[in-house]
Image (tube, rainbow, N blue to C red; front, side):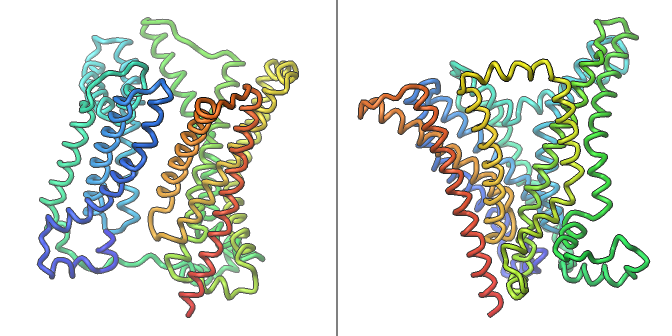
Length: 483
C-alpha cells in the first residue's frame, strides 16, 4: 500500500524483480526486527529463572509463541496492504482483523455456550453448536490463551504447541494468498489520491460560507479550532462521545436482562436479576471504566497526530515561523484535543462521584486502614505512578511522531513496555546483588520507600528527557525543511 501511494510499485515491477522477492522483502524486514527484539530481551527475561517462580521452559515457550504470532501478524498485514489502496486502510484492516481474531471468540463462545445450555434440544441451539466449536478452536489458537497456559505454575508443556503450528500455518497461508493474487491486485497502478493537508482542508472549510454555518467559523484561537474540527472530527464526533459510554452501558444491561429473562422463561437454571444496589454498581462501574478507557485510548491516538501530521506533510518549519513558541503551540493543540474529549471526562467524573456514593460504606473504613501510614503511601504512589506512566507513554508516542511517519503509536507502546520490563528486572537484580554479594539487607519498609523513590525518579527523568528531546527534534527538522 505504501508503494502504491508513492507511485513506486510500478517501478519495482519494471525492474524485473519477481513478486516473490517483493513480498518476501516487504514481510521479512519487519519480521526480522520483531524477532531481533525477542532475542534481545531473552537474556534479560532469563534472569527471572534465577529469581525463582519461572522456569527456563516457560521463558523459551513464551518467546517461541510470540514469534509464531508475529509471523501470522506480519503476513496478515502484508495481505491487507495488498488488498487496500492506502496505508491507513491497511492499518485499520489489520488492526480490526487481528482484534477480531483475538477477542471475539473469547467473548462470543462462552455466551453461545450459555445460550446452548438453556435448551440444548432446540433446533436453533443445535445450529449454534458448530459456531461455538469453531470460535472455541480460534480461541485455543490465539496467543492470549497460549500465554495464559504458559504462565501457570509448574508448566511443563512442549515448546512447539498447537498455537505455534497454527499461527505458522496461518502466516504461510496469508503469504501464499498474497503471492497468488499479487498480479491481479496490482494491475491498476493509478496513483492514489493523496489525503488533503490540514491547510487545504482549512481553505475548503472556509469556502463553504461560514457565516451561514456558525459551527464552522474560526475560533479566536486557531490551534484549538484546528485540532477540534480537523483532528477530532468536530461536533459530529463530539455528540458521539457523549453517547458512547451510555450506549455501551445500556447494551450490557440489555444483555444481562435478556439472558436472565430467557433462563426464567425456559425454566432451566435460576435467573439473576440485579437489585437496586447491584444495578447502581453495574451502571456506575461500566460507565466509569468505559469512559476512562475511551479517554485514554483517544488521547494516546491523538498524541501521534499532535506533531505527526505536520511532520508527514513537511510543515513543521511553518509552525516555527509563527510568533509563538513551539511549546505554546503544542500546548494549545493538546488543549484543543482535550476540549474534544470533554464528554468522556464528564462521564468519568460523574460516574466516579456516583461510585463514591455507592461505595460509601466501604469508604468509611479508609480512615482506619490508612492509620498505619503504609497503605496510604501505597495508594498515593500508585496514583502518581499511573498518572506519570500515562504522561510518559504520551511523551514517547509524541517523540516517535517526529521521528517516523508511520507507526508512532505502536512503537511507543513497545518501547514503554520494554522499558518497564528492563527496569523491573534491573531493580530485582540489584536487590539480589545487594543481598547476596554485598550483604546489605534492608527491611521491608526501607525497601518499599527505596523502590517508590527510584521509580518516581526514573519516571520524572524520562518524562523530562523525552520532552526536551522532542522539541529539539522539532526545531532541527523545521530548520532542515525550511532551508
